[in-house]
Image (cartoon, rainbow, N blue to C red; front, side, top):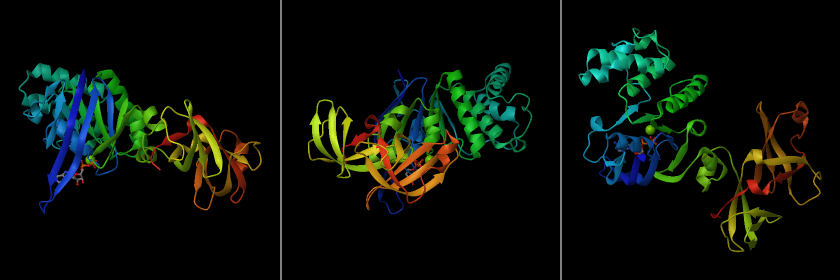
Length: 365
Ligand code: ADP
Ligand code: MG
């Protein structure tokens, strides 16, 4: 069963000037039970609004939200089997860690002993035992984040919603917490719906990612699908780095097409879609899937150009190569060998090799 399902959900806000603003447009999503599901997109694309509609803080203008098969339109937030972890943690400063976590259970008038056990279990799960009596200001950012998480899981929701929960942490701690949250989700076995604008974070943590732009879902898939087979230019560009090359279809058969790249290089690309001969298409290739060689190294037709930029990045080096006055390609090479570092200076003529099965064809010209 789906933990959460959105069916044709739209949200229209009325601005100050009474103009309508469509923040979310016809979003349909199926989020399976027990999954780590991310909503990924740039600031302002509607991620928080979608989360708030699942939580019940906003109602869809049109469309419906279902949680575990039940329609939620008439259910207020506190009667929905979900809980939200906010970016600013929203901890009570005057309460201790244990009191913060117990707060929601006390509102439900549960027996004392049961509250104590559940708070103890939740704090153990987020590895905060021993800090029960501290106040939030006596904790680090990472620890405050864990208290917020304990407070959400202590209520034993079926679905946990996260709105950019790690945004306030520094990079190293954020990376640690990403893995910790992922492990916790696997341990708890409940559904996490996780909002982020950070593509690396989404790739690291998610079972599935929905990529959003301007209130619309562009693609839903596993991290590998989203990265290896982006379905449009926006997704290819937003997740990782991509090269876009112009191509023209010159041949077509059952196994794929032959595309003339930059009007110079014919490449045979396997693909299941059909494109008419003559159609101008966009080819996507990731920088790490192209290889750079000295000029005349390969005895076969390939792209040739001049190195215009070399940036050493530690694990790899990033080269920008000018192919024609109008087009460049970015190539990344892993620095496995020390000798790699001295190759290819600015101004040098080089060849670029591309494995045809790592090229993705987009129908858009
Ligand atoms: P995200 O979380 O992806 O950054 P939001 O869901 O917060 O995006 O916002 C999407 C769009 O809707 C933004 O342009 C935002 O300004 C607008 N918006 C959000 N909430 C309201 C509101 N209550 N009234 C009017 N406009 C809103
Ligand atoms: Mg937001």
